[in-house]
Image 1 (tube, rainbow, N blue to C red):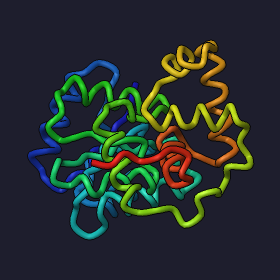
Image 2 (image 1 turned 135 degrees about the horizontal axis):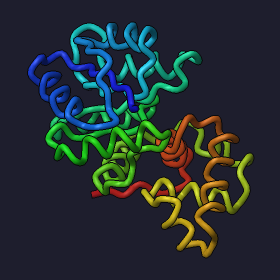
Image 3 (image 1 turned 180 degrees about the vertical axis):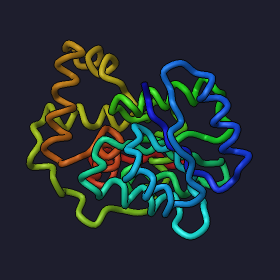
Length: 220
């Protein structure tokens, strides 16, 4: 059973998400928060698997709430799936840097929302859609890293290559095919890289890859 906390200041949005999730086997809505502060408080009390977090909320916004959740070692098992609109794209990279495991557009199909929750709940990052790669590329291009070589020396050449593929949105099976290795070996390399770089999940690994200049951001 995947336990989900809804965090959105719009009652209609919360009602819609609850109706969808309550009808799904294997998913339970354990609480609702109307702002970032209550999302943090409820997460500490309820320990959900996934927080469906809106970006813009009164008081404490979704990004700062995500940062506080990610910084709390007692909430290491709580994953944040950030909700955004096309008009809020500038928040996406900040959300990933804060510790979100991925993001989803608010006009996504219900099936996509359910899949996203399942992906994030099992500890993976929602980074496959091309829109994610495009957005990250654009925002990192606009903000060059302070130390482009930070952390590179702890990775092997093979690990750097694999992290670069992760940052381009490839899954373990695609990485395995590209590098002619088994999916299990690809997963092992990814996990080792995350451990060495102290990355919480693949989302933060992607952030590191762009900030370290491991791959070149695309520009329009």
